[in-house]
Length: 65
Image (cartoon, rainbow, N blue to C red; front, top):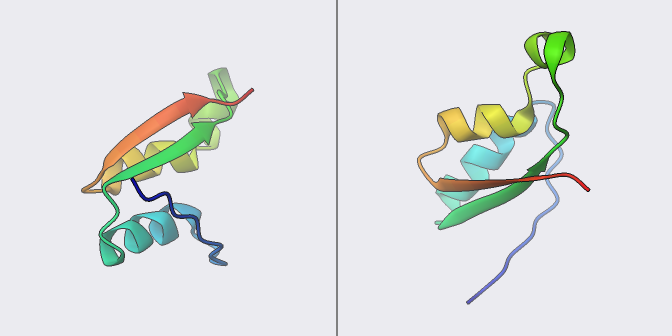
């Protein structure tokens, strides 16, 4: 199993993650979430949520510690 990490500077984090995964033939994306709830969750859509909705790869989201 190969584990790969990459530092990408892009203002749209979700798009950068989705594009990198597609271009690099990544099998699964693993990321954490801040676990916002209530009004903050409604107003500040999470990067993890956007990646889950837009990626054609499997996405594993784990709660932040």
